[in-house]
Image: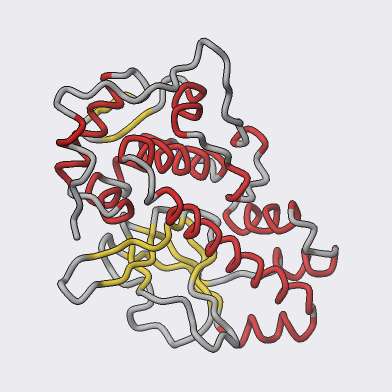
Length: 269
């Protein structure tokens, strides 16, 4: 499945496209380009338009006044980013690549033409923006949880999104979503994140290979994190596992090697 096909399938799941809108989107032939890792995806591009992630992982970032980076969103193959047509206050931050990315650019003129001919496409684009904001709200909710469940939930999200996009979870972590990225999403130090990841591994909820996380059995991690992927609005039913509450699923806190006071209050800010 191509990223453009995946995007249309996702919009179909939300019942936002008619047959004419579907054909118009699938007929697009956007120009693809390679963007190196840790680069601005819009560098040298005209303002406006949208960018479809074809391969790799990108993110929306914001820099605080003290130079600290915060990651506000993640983008996987098939995700559309930077569309903010008509918004009084466009989404904040820059779009950066976390790994080398292939990006397909859709000029603003093309989008305008599609919207004029097919108003349903504009509703679909706004729906994608609302989904992105909804994911950000879930991250904000998770910020009030203890670090081990916060990071377990994020790993579950990356697992669900990478699986739905046809990518391997370990590849996503190895190529883009490294410990520093998790730290910038969870507002923790990289040292704290490393401790949490090793504690999750000690609890046999994940495995680590050179810092890249893998999930040997998703159900225990999903239950521990309380992860429900409904907020992601993914069309892939295989990525819709629900939290289970059976006696065989671990729901108690991860066993730490140090005291809980060592982990509960550490922050990057």
